[in-house]
Length: 355
Image (cartoon, rainbow, N blue to C red; front, side, top):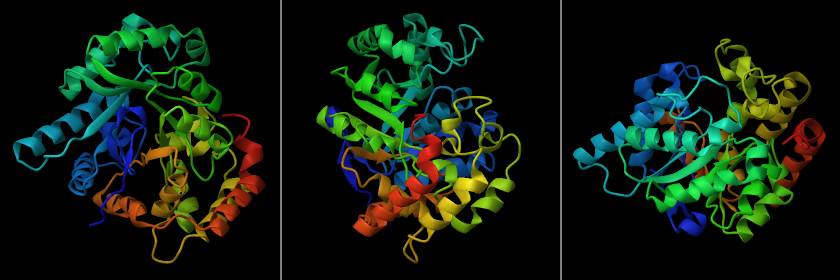
């Protein structure tokens, strides 16, 4: 089995796996936005990842209304009881998409600045502590906070108070835009930024990645495979056409439910004119016998500011494919040049100025 590379997680000093386990899909049994996820396969995938030495799990309180956090806690408890888990595992979660604890909401209002008030964040943190079974959460990330919340800045004082109370060890943010990322890393105690970064979303390379490295802020590359676009190759068209209307890669292509950048890297309205020709070119760069997913995870890790990628893994076979990214050589200069050429030709005009 491949040994997963480790990198230092910014100012926390943690040594974490460069291929993390994105756990959104573990909430799908509670009406989540992913299809084709069998709960037993999800648990088997997490166990396979941990057996391989992975030690970084990313979740959120709203994934399945708390089910993802509960599933992670149960897997870790079972492994500890069986003597299968002796190494430290970092579980990072998020708060803010729900108005307080999603199991006991303060209101049914939608996503708004009200979700980031002291009352709401304190309730959210209490809920995550309860579900994960810990007194102190490793890392709490603001979950796509509105720009005005970050500009106002009061939310940072709330996070610091939660840390002083011993309820969270570190804080960070999962953001939609590069501008929001810069607003967060201006705070000296921001530990991490989670941002969409992949071969179809290269804007973070312009200014943000270097700034994060200079500030010792760990970068978590989320959606590193662009909701599967960078994993399926020639099969991508048939795969997308097979998805039911309940999958976010269908119902949210135009941003009907949440920011469309979260689904298919914001390209869901441009499949024929941009995505399919771009993916064909990108697939041609992948060496024979190398999984496309692993190649493009390795691309995301090519920038030294990126500490960890968090692909969603729905089966043990996907885990095995993705963790091979750690053993791959860095993309060649010619491969990187072609990736940027494809981006400039097909993708840049559609996404670069939006996020």
